[in-house]
Amino acid sequence: MDQVMHAAAPPVPQPKRRHRQNQGYWRRFGVFYLMMAPALIVLLLNNYLPMIGSVIAFKNVNYQVGIWKSPWVGFENFQYLFNASDAWRITRNTILYNAVFIVLNMAVGVAFALMFNAMRSRRAAKFHQTMMFLPYFLSWVIITYLVYGFLNPEIGMLNKTILPWFGVERTIDWYTEPKWWTVILPIVNTWKGIGYYAVFYLAAIIGIDQEYYEAATLDGASKWRQIWTITIPLIRPVIIVLTLLQIGRIFYADFGLFYQVTRNAGSLYDTTLVIDTYVYQGFIVTGDVGMSSAAGLYQAVIGFVLVLCSNLIIRRISKEDALF
Amino acid sequence: MSEMTGKIKAFRGSEISRPADVAINVFFTIYTILCIFPLLLVLVVSFSDEKTVLVNGYSLFPSQLNLAAYDFLLNDWANVVRSYGISVFVTLAGTIASLAMMALYAYPISRRDFKHRGIFSFIMVFTILYNAGLVPFYIMYTQYLHLQNTVWALMIPYLIQAFFVLVMRTFFTNSVPVELLESAKIDGAGEWRIFAQVVLPLSLPVLASVGLLCTLNYWNDWFMSMLFVNDNVHVNIQYRMYKALQDLQYLSSNSTAYAAILAQNPNFQMPSETVRMAMAVIGIGPIVFAYPFFQRFFIRGLTVGAVKG
Image (cartoon, rainbow over all chains, first blue to last red):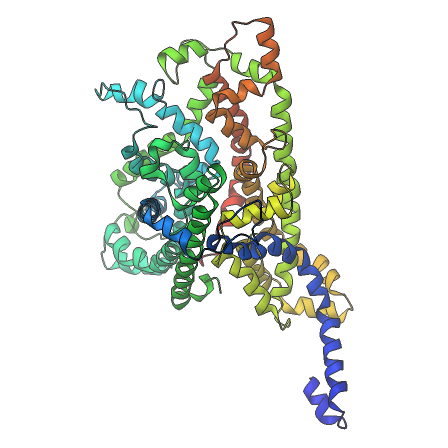
């Protein structure tokens, strides 16, 4: 509309028109900047300014001199990090655990959703859904207590009651033997999180048009065949998007799971130390700023690439589900 | 088959067979028990006699019950109540502040006539893509903002969650008709009035859902207390529970009641296992009570604005 008016009006000298247009912008949208200001300030302090602090990874930080005057050491911190076997171990743990979690979330989530959908009684289905979802809302601290009730070496339910049932005589010192945790952690993680994924998949399954099933029934297809040829292909986009979202975050571990549930037992670090807990241990507990900030930057950069790539792929598949 | 000869009912596609349905129901009954059983165990042990627990182990059917654990905690109620207070304050104030700030950010970037909304959307989305990590974050809060040992360190990190802002933006774009905004503008309303009187009332579903998820984030957090608080005063209840389990000495060394009891009765042994479980019950209680009422909104909050269908 502005352009129409300008075409109709007599020509106006350039500077005046720009000034008037600018004034119009601020008059219209200045309020928006005011509205966004609080959130922007928080983002600045919480997210953007700390990004500058990433340079710590390239310095040998001496608190006496302060961060900015500390000597620049280039990639030395990264060399220490990758020469020690720690870097390989924490990367392996992070990626392997997350891969297992992703597979379990998908398989168990889809299975549960299919079963909920197949149940004849809607009320029973709703009830079991509600129960299944409860662990999702418990904090990791609470889950640690629940796990502790089973894994306490002297008086926990596993050693005292359940294992003797199965005739196993020896007591296992759960919190000092690393090998069991490759099984314990996926079980706990799935138990806590499955409600989230099952609900997503169930929502997708419910959205499938009944006509497909009617046609298949008229053609004589059994229920199992219908699930295999109709349900699963039609929820494939949902499965792919959710899986891609998780793959994007494969370099980030759930701190609560790996720190709390294992009770941060050092003897378990071989199989339970992940990048996030390594950075925490190194920085807060040990005070080794160099290695922990190098590990942190390593995670941030690779994590960024992965999240970006996975989102670009999601964009090709289903635009509404992508972040941008 | 049965559909043709049976009574008239809505066609649902073929039903699964009876045996399969029974099998599924049995499976989920077992799974439901698996979800409830651990919580029940913690509850029962908190009411058990300490000596029985030490001898027979954790069990749903202890030979002796008593209230010694709660008695001990009740003596030390000041610490627990203060931690609860911190949790409640941070959760309530944090959720309200968070909702307000996020909605105020989501509204401008949802307006199609705002020329620069792309830039501000990007500013928000980028925080999901790149996270500078723990070290700079910690240094920022302690050495520059000096927020250690304050409740603000527990609240500020969770104020702006980019994902929720995007959910709100999608909701504003899709569910607030542009015609309503335009007619409000024609009526002479400024942006603040449009936001407060047109957009917000229509957005109650998304505000409720996001609000509940924010509440959950704040209530379940223990990490910020662990990072930023070391004075035992500004910790929230989750952190106190964590410490009670991790550090056997924590309960006794931080308890004035314990010192008093010990002064009177030097042989007093704190019933540590049952007291820990009692702490857990106190921490879990609110969530389990509130859960049946709010789970519908929680679930809707998770699926709103996310995956289609």
